[in-house]
View 1 (cartoon, rainbow, N blue to C red):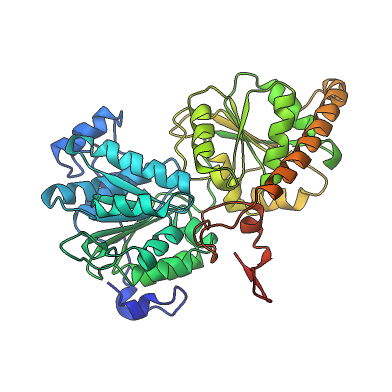
View 2 (view 1 turned 180 degrees about the vertical axis):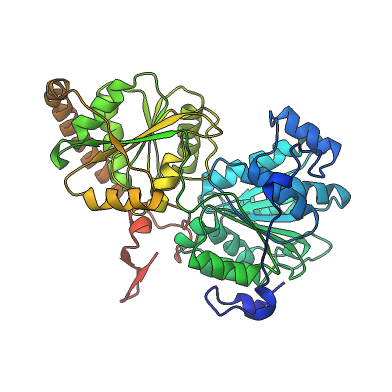
Length: 478
């Protein structure tokens, strides 16, 4: 493993000894069942009980290499089975040496962290495997107690884990025989590109200083960027690369379309689309939290079964919203890019609507990747205004897919304008009331440095807007 000095900068030039990277075996020669991959019977039975009929491509290529003790870089689309690809080899190693704090998994968002922990516990249910979820927005003391009990896995967002490194007694170094970070045998960096996009680089650097150099490390990402390469150099040793996705690829079973709309008529075209697919499970993506809130008010006023998901919601509310969508009680989810990757929708998503274009082609791919998963068909429709033409061309160029136009019935759109206009005015009024309520109830977050809420996706965080820190004259970024 690299030394703490080597890990101190995620952008430093790579030492030659750490750069050795080989490719995985030819996928056509890889075994096609979980038992053939080298997994023990109990884990194969767990896979069967969870409905895993056969390993996915990333699992076929990753698991045998992981069982050989290799460090891994896994590149795969969301929904490809990455969680099982890293969890199963770690669980097999844990069965031979069942000790606490055996593995540490870092994830960019709270929802993904909860999902990973749930998947790990389900795969290790027969062995009573326990995973502690450590993330912002929840009490530090409760988490400290959970860590003191010695969970087998820790699944964390980096900012909150650093909080515990700095303040939780006995977490970094063992005292009186208590488990600590020094017991970690495996490190997983999941959604590594997203971790770095959210500026978690300094937190990851700090974490690397406090876990053993002698460990096995898995890095999984949907894309391979310059930042991901730097993280690879800082955290992995002689890694094997497994790539089962082309850059900027979208599922072959996904139909990608657009709807032309003047910027002033986006609301009415969105309502038209929602009306055209009354029975479809739908995610509507926006780039701003305030936009997600406003559209939720508007669609509720029009009688649509809708719920929202964004980083300014309290954690229990986020969990309730996601559950109601997954269970089908609400068929429309309005979300920021928080839900764009990593979340496992157990209920098939039929339609993705981009109410506003994402900032990058990569974000577009993760949004539309919520549908057409695991070989199912799906559809994405982007609401395209006169200001979005160049962005659309960039997305089409990156994906190699030309979108076709979803034809609308203009007379029907015209009939909707008055009612949608009234609902929009009501939603604007409710937004003003919400803003007043939020300003009255505003209070300081528990960590003035911002680490506690670094896994939020609010407007300030997404845009990198400079914010003034209380008591400090200069501006800084959250």
